[in-house]
Length: 282
Image 1 (cartoon, rainbow, N blue to C red):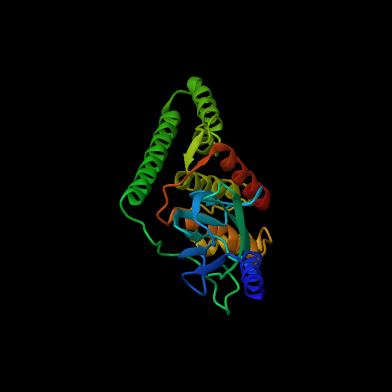
Image 2 (cartoon, rainbow, N blue to C red):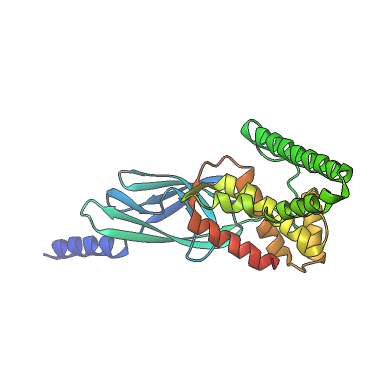
């Protein structure tokens, strides 16, 4: 009788203290690195509820991690991910077992920054991780379009100067009116008309718009400045903190220069635009 009691007591203790085990593929994880999270459960996993594949964030916050894949293997949950923001993060993994009972596990992780100990400013990524193929072609098209626009405006300016005085004022006013009809955020607004937007395209358009807006606000042309020069302007003119500058640089570069075909909704894009306009005082 005592043996039977001990046996049932051991079974009860096993269920009472059963807890999922969390494994990371790397001990120290930095921003931008791909890592594998493994969760060992005490029952068969029938369905993974959260997180879903794509960018993951808490409510009203910018994404801090990109979920690249989530798979189940009997009693294990395997999640491939890449963090886009340093610091301490907490998020929940939710799943259903073979009895269709929903379970969850809270995961805590401390992500290291790419800054060195003796650096006070954000990392200047001068050479992107991947800048070839379609990215180089996009840059070439942007430069070509910009050159054509400048050439056309210069030609119109010369033509106006050679016209008789009777038509000079009218043409000048028309030229000025045409310039006012093209706000600096026209390209970005056209992109935001879509219900879903390629995240990389949005960040390129947002980056160009923010540079133009900063140029108008500070009366300094920042469109052709290097990343280090822009960060110095943000620090000296807008008095932004090193943390804000690091977050700004890391968000734009992690999306622009890393392989990423993720799409976001225009609602999320508008929220991100509003956030950076508020930070930059635009």
